[in-house]
Length: 292
Length: 217
Image (cartoon, rainbow over all chains, first blue to last red):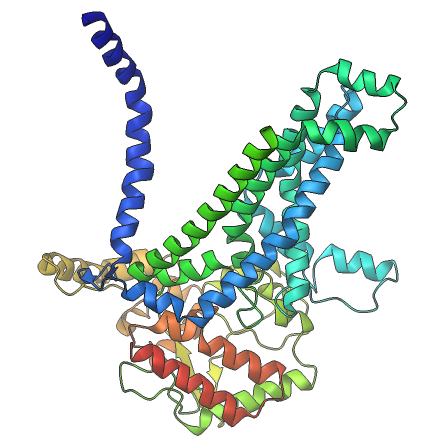
């Protein structure tokens, strides 16, 4: 009995740093955010209890729902591009050869630079007056005058930002897919070759089903990341034109900090967090079903 | 708009924003500039990152900016001969300027008011005004400190310092939400005025209503 109690204490001691980390950096901030959402608080005045007032305000806040719907649209558009693009790149570079390793590295490099830096870079690339994209298109005769990629037309701005984010992020999915594909036992793929399966038959009937968990994982990460999109829209369009490209997090940021409405920002954050939680639960259920 | 006698922001609840003929006059003037092709197309998608580069193109007569840009403009365009003028109003010889960006405030309920006031006095002292602000070619807060050795060595900054006499600082707790916010009514008003054919009275009325709502919160 003494040994059992002692080994439990030792186990808890090993767990303690991780538990403390989670308590300090996750549980406490989350709890504080929930508390803030029930108050009006501008930082320069004491917090004032308002109960569900912030949530009622959020339900009637037209701009928040415009931003939320735009965020969903952005997520729905970029996620398939990242998954399909990342998977195709993985299929292209999965073999263990120097050239393919070099290609994988080259595609992965943008993943390690910050999204803010990437957004600034692409802002310059898309610049109507100074960017090389318009210059190249005009030199090739594809366009006759510079295109205003950002901040003028919402759909065009969205497409431009999707292109920039896909360039930056697709390598992450590719690396995860490469790992999953390389983990498939070679006798399975050899057996399919012996059976006369074509490349696409091997991909659709063997490789894809056996890497479905990775696909679902990358989908989950992409969806969460896209629902939390902020940097690229803040830097590249500032929500223009007329707030049509302002995402949920952009609106939450404005309310929380420049507008000094921390309580309201916290309530908006809670609504977004619960939405992401709902997506995650659906994702986990799908993963469990695929495993079964 | 200030130089044309207009008032812009709503100072607080019940205050009226965008008052004066200068508001519509300036919007009409700038709308006409856009329609006449006197504004680069790229300005529509400008977020501030590249607007200073237009100045170096040689096709821009005037760039509205602050004294912080003097050194930058000179570095980027070493062969360009440029000067400083105050932002003009509609009437001849009218001018105004925006002073600020950095605020020193004592929050209500502060328990260290005396310390805060002492710090403010330190910032406004002769030595700090000259040896910190003026030395870095930042405008001094005190107009009586404008005549200093650093500004004397830099004539362009002396011209900028004239803005202190006609400059204003907006006074409202909701300045960011009314004016600076990328989702705010001020930017919406300017965009509608410049890039649409919406009736300017309607554009101004809509912005006014939105700014009043913000100020009344």
